[in-house]
Image (tube, rainbow, N blue to C red):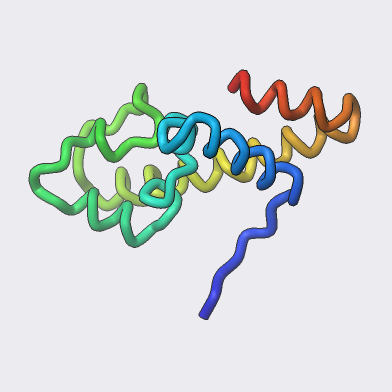
Length: 109
């Protein structure tokens, strides 16, 4: 089974260009890395005894106080929600101001 999330092709191209330009740092800082977006990997990291909550959180300022099911469920959606929101913002900026401006916005964030 293949599960796909349909993202704007220009957004995907722009994020791929930035990943090439900045390396893994870009994906990690923006929570777009596979270990953040993949639910199974998130759960594996969350359940490891030696993993700190700050290492798990997509948002480093997140209030993750305990390793419980509620914290896990809330945390595992953060990266995917951020990706979808960035995709939508990129699309709307492109529509209103053009792709060059959307690329600048994406790189600035």
